[in-house]
Image (tube, rainbow, N blue to C red; front, side):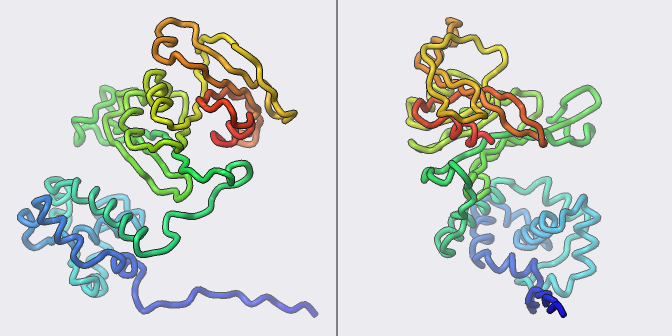
Length: 312
């Protein structure tokens, strides 16, 4: 007779998950930031701490609007009050606070909390998430990408995208080791991604690696990264004009189709990037199908499959 496996249930806790999350924030941090950014003088009944707790709940519960946040917190006002005296907001209070209070406070709270956790919790943001060829990299790998956020046109005048549509675009640089954002820029959706590359990569350190899509290819910026000692891997544009300087070995990998050192032939591109580049063409699995993709990089010594793995 087979012995049935006993299902293990997670241990209970006397505090709500939201309270456990909020307890990680040092008691002085929010009040100090509120004074620094002038948020405390804009607050009367709805304190900066209550606002932070409400926003954390909204994110944690995947709330879709004011009603979701305010109704849920009103129904759990007693439990909410145990989180350092936080109070549930009315719809008007939350809407008004989101509108007039400085977003700089929330941004600085994020970075301060990241530093606090990295200093006090061993192993935080240092997870081993790399696999295969990428395990040998000790330097940080950054991924650059963007997403368009659809908005309501009549309430977001600054974000007009088309005549009857509004949209904002979030440009993000993600640490591939910790999966935590290192830089985020929110702007109107009408600007091309390449205009944000310099800002996203401003604080990359020598030896670190940036990986990005073809939309972020801007040769002047890429040459600047090379001069700073930053390695990068990107998708090659379909209309990129180049000449092959020499062909490198593919090391017999069946998915590597070409491995070449190239130079730009268009005068403007050659002036923007006067050095040699590496071009690797590989078969990469996308949505269950193998697709031929061309990559470019400023690193001439990695194996061709390492270049493809970094992007994949």
